[in-house]
Image 1 (cartoon, rainbow, N blue to C red):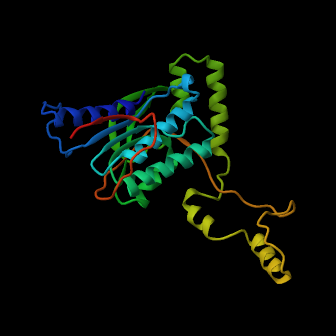
Image 2 (cartoon, one colour):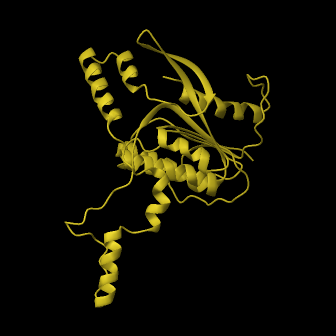
Length: 266
């Protein structure tokens, strides 16, 4: 609705037009040569091969991560939508890091996860864009413009209203959304992930020391009366787009029988 998918596909088409020697609808375009163009857009299953929508998405994503080179252009329109919120966020986060650090390719990554906007401060060649929208007299107006910075909120309930969802359902959805947004946020954030891997829970560490003194095998599992604190939070954003550009690095060939959509030259 906001135009992020159109924005991604527009840039892919501009690359094809420019590299084929055609005119492009722009006053100025600086892109560079592209050896392959990869796209992971839309949602569709492959029942004839026993693949769910999410499995088809993961197969395409895996092919991109194993085939894209530093000269490639990648557009990703949503990753991790077909599973639980935390799982999807974790997969999207890891894929963005892999494109930046391992593939080191030019990429446009559209997502609804607000948390991914933090990658701009963690990765050198990442910047955030978002699609502009305004509320006017209780209605949502999409401006179809990309601006620097992440989106500040979601508009899913507004889109449901535009689609004709019954008013009672829309009102109830807004009530539930307000309640979720006003709840106390978890003290654990994705920024804590490196710390989470570096140190064990204090009670588990104390038991390990006691087990070493008694010469017993170490059991990292907490007992029922020893609570542990989980890490993670989730939120969605309408029209958040992240893009990364880097140079250098290597690539690997793909062993998959169903590669992602790709256009290659040279």
